[in-house]
Each structure stands twice: as structure tokens, then as C-alpha cells.
Amino acid sequence: VEVVRPKAPQGHSRWSKGGVPLCGLREALALKLDPGQLRLVMETGLSWLLLAHYRNQLLHLFTLEALAALSLNNLLPTPYGPALLQFQVLHCALSKEFVLPLATAEEVFHSSVQVLLDRSVIVCYRQGELSLNSERESHFLFLVNLLMPFVAGMWVVCKHLLLLGGGVETVPACVKGSQLLGARLLWTGHLQSYEVLSLEIIKNALASLTEAQLIFQVTSDSELGRDRLVKVSDERKLQQMTHQLENIVLQQDPLRAHL
Image 1 (cartoon, rainbow, N blue to C red):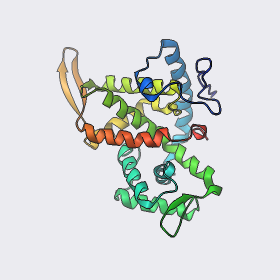
Image 2: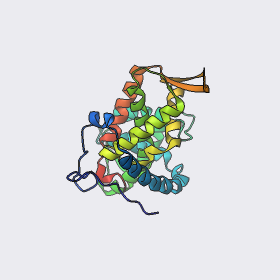
Image 3: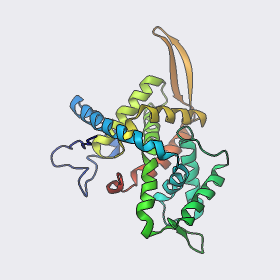
Image 4: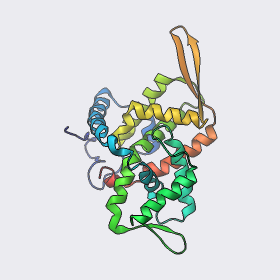
């Protein structure tokens, strides 16, 4: 499958070395792509989704290690505590995306970090600070990038829900709105993972948020039939999760995004 990155407007390049987003995040959230721009993003995304299908067949073999690496990625070097808190957020956010152990998030984090330590991917100093082993950096980044698309997808869905401003939206409209928001952020260069366009990732994100009681879904009768509606039930907690996911997604080095 040939993968072609969309070209940014003349004078701006997110995809060349040293590139920067075409605009600020606030402007990107309000941006409206013209049909040609949207088609280009979607066509490119299709290639990435096809490639991701084959990668995902083996993803479950690395899920826990990758989850631990992702919780450490934007913090290293770091004490154990902050990484655990970030792991708990990811554990909740991806609960419907992967089959996770029945143990507590803290127990899963401890065992997953121990695997990374045993394989010398990270090291732990006497004062309890976790740090990356520079000789195993490529292995660490491989694990991080396995799950980054799913985290980015959840972040996009959270952003879309907050943009509703307390309003109610049908499930199909929410899915479409999240996908279009992802397309805008891909065009502006704030995101690099085209899998945020995946309907499956978006629907699993809504399921995880429903289970966490951050949103609720109800069935309503209308002239067109029965609609499934989505509404934010705990805006404060949703904002907290969105902020935490944003720190993970937007602080990643874009030049490492597709190693």
C-alpha cells in the first residue's frame, strides 16, 4: 500500500524536518476544511488504516508494556508516583479498546514497569527515579507508538464532546463530528496518527467514557425514529482527562511519530 502524506499550503510544512503546526490549537479546533482538503486527509488516512489492520493482529502481545511506556513517555526521568497517575488515566481511557487484566491499575502498572526494567528498557535509580536507557530508546519508542493512535483518538473524542458546550448530540453525529475534528488536526499538523479517523476507535472511546460515567447515552424518539443521544455527565472530570491526554498526545516528538 502506498502511503502519501498530504501537502500543506505553500510556505508551511508540518511533515518536513523541523516543521511546526500550521496554526494554534484553538484555531485548528475552529477550522473548516474545504472538500478538497478533507478528501486528501481521508484518502491518506485510508492507507494508514489498512496498514494498521495488520499491525493490530499482534498488538495484544505488547499492550501492557506499551501502556507502561506511554505513561512514562512525556515524564522521563520521573518518580514512580506521577507515572502511576498517568497510567491510571490511560487504563481508564483504553478500557474498551483492549482486554486488560482484572487486577487494579496500580498492580498492572507495577508488573508492566517491572517487565521494562527486566529488559533494561528503563532503569531505576536508588532514589526511585525511573529513567530511559538510551541504548534501548528505539525499543521504547516502538512501544509508545503502538498505542499512541488510540490515545490520540480518545483525546479527539473528548475534545469534540467538550466543544458541544453541554449540548446533546446523536451518536452518529458525535462519531462524524469527532472524525472531522481529527481530520482538521491532521491537516494542521497537530496530530500525525491517521488512525484517529477510525470509526472503531471513536466508538470504543465513547464506550469507555460511558463506562467511566463521564458521558451518558439515552434513547429518544423522534420523527425519524429512535435516536441514541450522547451528553456529557461530568464535565469537570472530562476536562481533567482531556487535559491529561493532551499532555501525552501533543508533547510527543512529531519526528518520532511513525518509527
